[in-house]
Length: 456
Image (cartoon, one colour):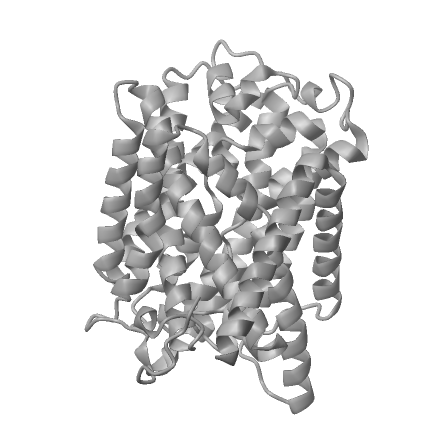
C-alpha cells in the first residue's frame, strides 16, 4: 500500500464530482445493492436455523440497518464525498481509522464483485448445463467494466432498471403469497397460519436459533452503505440523501419481512425445499416454470449488486488516492469525470477469479468470502462511532446539519449494542469464530500498512 507523495495534488473531491445521478437512481441503487442473492437464495438458511422466529432476526437486523443508514445519511448530507464513511472516520477518529475502513471496504467489495460474477454464471449454468461458468463470469466482468467506464449517468440508469426488475419480482412474489394464504388461487389449498406454530412451535430452536439466524440475516443487508458513497455524485445531495435514506430503509425492511413472512407461512421450516425458498413458494402456488423464473431473477439480483458494488469500490479507492492514502493515479478522473484507473483496479480480481474458477471450481471464492464475511459489521461500527463523534462536535459548535438523525444518541448506542452482540455471537461459534478472527487479522494488516505508509 505504498503512496506516491511526490505527485501533484489532486483537486478536492467535491470540485470534481459530476452530480449526474438522479434521486430516483440513488434510491434504486440503495435497494439494488441490498436486495441480492442473500434474499432470493440465502433467506432459506435463516428459516432453517430459527424456524418462524427468523422474523425476529430480521426485525433486529432491520432495526440495525435503519439506524446505520440514518447515521450515514446525516454525515453524507453534511459532507457529500466519494470516500463517505472513510472520510468521516478520518475526521472523527483519525487518518489511520479512515484509511483502514476505506481499504477494508474496498477489499471486501473487490472480492464480492468476483463472487457475484462467478455466482451469476453458476446459476445460469444450472438452467443451461452446457454453458461454461468461467467464460460466463469473464463475460459479465467485461460487460460491467464497460458499463462503469461509460460514465455515472449511464451507470445510474442501468442500475435503476436492474433494481426495478428485482423490486417488481419481490412485490409480485408477496402478492402471490398473500393470494395463496387467503385461498384465492384455484386448486391450491391454503395452509393458513399453521406453519407459524407447527413443527415445534414459533421458535423451535429457541434464542440460540434466533441468534444463529441473525448472523446470516445481517450479512444479507450489507451494501446499503453505498448510498453514502453515491451521494457525492447526486443532484442536490443534501435533499436527495435524506429522501433516499428514508425511502430505502423502510422499503428494504418491508420487502425482506414481507417476503420472509410469506415463505414462513407457506413452507414448513423443516422442508428441504428451503434451499430455494422463493421457488418453493411459487411451486406451492402451482405456477409453472417457477424454479427457472426465480433463478433468472436471482441472476439479475447478483448482476445488479455487482454493478453497484463496482461503482462503490471504484469511488472508494479514488477517494483514497485523492487523500494520499493510495497511489495518486487512483485519484484521477478522465474528462468525463470517470475514474478509469480506479474502475480497472476494482475489476482486476474479478478477471483473475474467472481463471481461478477454471482451475479450482467452487473452491477459491468461498474461502475468500469467509475472510471478508464480517467486514460490513466493522464498517458499520466505525460509521456509528464516527457519527457519534461528529454529531456531538456539530452540536457543541452550534452547526446546523441539513439532515439530523432522530433519537440521537440513544439510537446510535442501541445500534452499537446490537453490533457488539453480533460480534459476541460470531466469537461463540467455532465456524464463525474463524471468520471473525480473519476479519480482525485483515483489519490489523491494513491499519499497520496504512500507518507505516503515512510515516514515510
